[in-house]
Image 1 (cartoon, one colour):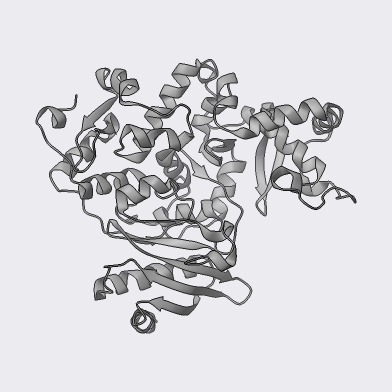
Image 2 (cartoon, rainbow, N blue to C red):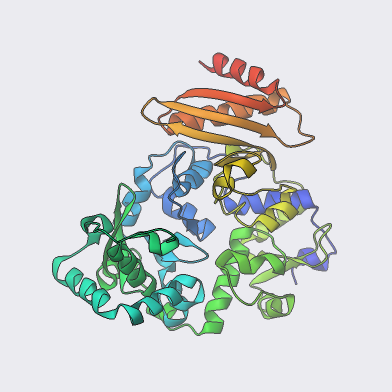
Length: 424
């Protein structure tokens, strides 16, 4: 047990939020200009950076990094991948990870642990072995390829096809070999994956692949993922841990007992939680600061819908009292807030959301709608911070002209426009 538990101390829910934000790098803005190395260290801190291709604003991985680093060049993420300091894998979804973590996803257990993709890929290879083997043999001879290097032919797609089946055959086969571990992503070109033989990509990883990670038993691998999840979340009950890597079955307090006994984790009561919160030993100092009320949230930023802070909808509801659904997959007539809605983080609270679209050719950052949460008043300090956060995101995205649509409350629009005029 931790010293905090032994002394009968308890975190308030607010203190637990601040501890989670600190662990995620969202408590305070970066106090210096971002550096190239911050890309890898930020991903190491989160463990997983989910990939999504929707780009009505910046694509999600770039936006997640911007929420933590501020104005950084998007090319840095692509460069870190091409340099071998990052890798791509299936985790809870398709993700960037640091090169130091690739061993967790490469061994026999790691390949099968996380995703439906491995099962589908294995079935596809059984059914289309000759074509898939020919594609892999071609890459061995000719080198890295993109799906775009293969022409689409009539009949490649058709009505009723979804998911992988919307792709031309070569794209499906490339993705299947990626899921099976024979191919990896060596770099991206205009966000298109460039696939190469896994041995070629692994040979240039920095740091190199740890062979011991490949040999982890299923039990040891699960334990590593549990520990990584707790570290990334800052403080969490057992019930939230499995989602981070989509582990099955769910993690229980009983399963965590050996990690407590070994000192890997600490237990701490949290106000309103029926079960203990768990904190990684690396965050012992943050836990102490949280208990003493010495964590202060000063950051205001826009979050991606796929940010680790909000991707688990049950967790964000319990931790931040924030009901959130990404509505780009919802029919337009049934959307409440918009197509690509970004949660607004302000000084430790999720205070609202905005539906945004970047018109890159015109340099316009359009806010179709902006909503504050019920009970959140547009105080001058909030308006000022929100105006700066929106303007900062727009400038970083090379869409510095802001077009503001409706707001709730309605008077918020006038206040934001006044702030933007003052800033210019």
